[in-house]
Amino acid sequence: MEERVKLKEELNIASLSYQMVEYDNNHHFEIRNRKIHNSFGFILNGSVQFSMLSEHFTARAGDLIFIPEGIRYISHWDGDPLIRFCNVHFKMPKTGVNPWRTMPPQRINSQSNEEFLELFEEIRRLSKGDYTDQLQAYSCFYRLVAKAIPLMEVNPTRLPPAPLQEAIAYIEKNFATISSVQEIAAACFLSESRLYHIFKDYLDITPISYLNHLRIHNAMTLLTTTELSIQQIAERLNFHSEYYFRKTFRKITGVLPSHFRKML
Image 1 (cartoon, one colour):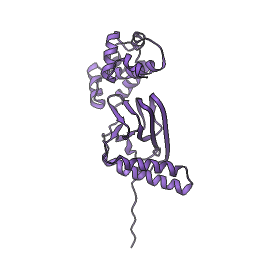
Image 2: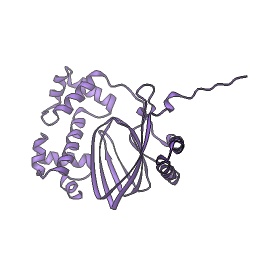
Image 3: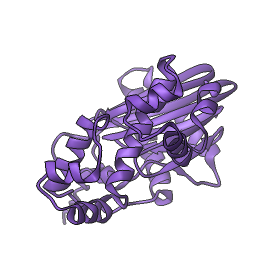
Image 4: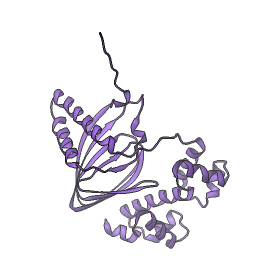
């Protein structure tokens, strides 16, 4: 008698790495196109706010988070006074099924985060060892995944239609000069109604919301890296007025641009 069982291909990963990060006080990241890897992270000290296109979430010390590949996001970290977090990064094979595409960025709710922290620490220790130790590090990673997946939110993946991809590409290239939704629709040979519906159907936001999120992401970078005034940033990103810029910034980030700059 012979019994043979084949494991699912989507369980395979191409590589695994561990990272420990430390900063003082506050820190700001902008990730424009995160194609490299998926990551589980564990926050040891401080707190963070992640801002994506149509969603936000906050995590604090003791929280487990997941960030998939291919995500554009901004994160703002506050220390107490130290910021410390560890990451486990993993890449999927270039061919085959990638189940992580259905996982949105998220804070993973668990009653036993201490168990996750122990697995992170074990992966860190084993990743520095010899071949046998590193095999055990992979084993620890799969134990982490087995504990995390039942707790994670899943979004069904749908391939965006070509008109939506064209509209997004046009907005990302011209966000600082676009004057109206009509301009975007005309550039993509769509009616304004059709443009609105494909954004709502696939992203659950309107074209103007997508444009404003992109502009605010860039405003956060300008507030962080330049000494431009609020009015100058509003003009550079083609907001109709400084008032509208302040209002939009607060709606998306929860704070006024002047307060955001003081937080840095």
